[in-house]
Length: 488
Ligand code: CS2
Image 1 (cartoon, rainbow, N blue to C red):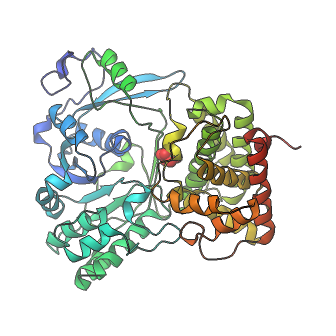
Image 2: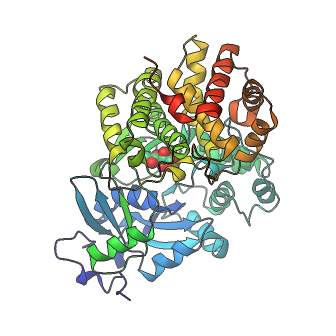
């Protein structure tokens, strides 16, 4: 068994491999991060690490796991050190990161988590808890008050289970005069504004004065985060072991690209993230729409068509000529037409770069991973673009095909070759059963679009419904080859 990465074994790393050179014992936690997954550790933590390196010891990160214990234990055994390897066809570089100063598993250490959020030395609470971590009713931006976790938390707000519950309970314990900024880093629309609204709504159900305080004194900047960080596998860990000469059970492999745009709206001191590559700006929305639609929207198209075509990874999908051509059209023809470029931004170059990033052959980013939680993702990534276009009388032929592919994927849970697919989305069954209960494609599409928690309450134009039904019929009869084929 190889030696584990830890403070003590750091000197054994290969010469030249970047690692923390500051005294980690002097670092204080100034950031509490909820949802300590690979994405945070490969993204926001890397914008914070150079600040610690240059001696600003206020910004150590205390990470919180809300759902799973394992990674908190893994990180503790490694003194919260882990490696990040950035890789594409040309670049391959690894570093060890020291910005984490602790990792707590909330259900087992709730009081410590709440005390940490309440600590006036903590200035930032950041979050990456995925789309479904916010108990948001998918089609809208309202709190899902029927959610069992939320119902539990409003009855026992000091023993919360949900993300919103933990955040509100921690803030409730915090001195009123200690400024705090909550930085949402998930791929949801207007993420800061949305989190503020959900949290105020949640707190209003049991403590109106807390709701007022949240609304009036806490800052919730909007952000756009971007880096492709596939879930780690046994192969990731083995490869890290070879590079480091030490075992790293928390190793991450990701792409070299990274981007973070943050609305400059903080309450109290903040890390100088603008010095470490982040863009602090007064308006994140154009960046957000561009990223959610062009990157995440195309990603979801790759995921569902890829799953149906038996293409396991994003780079496999991009190596399949028909899929790659389809994805390019979804992105550069349909979605591109719905986004406004941020000032001074070259969106064509952005699209070219995205297609190259998707082709990165070294990442093994699973289409199955991106396909997860479609009922949360599709309403953010595709439906606003479709709604806006249809309202203006414009068809989006490729995006409409992608939507049909998702419905077909949900309905059949089988790929083109008839093999079963694993669908991981708590909201999927309600939609899939509507599709399966219908006898014709038209009935199926009508039933699906009437599922308002995903598709919203407004009606969809009949011509659109009919086009979707046509695509569904094509898929049922001939599979994805016929759906995505170039019709000139
Ligand atoms: C992906 C994102 O899994 C998914 O749904 O689309 O995680 C994507 O890789 C990131 O948002 C890239 O910044």
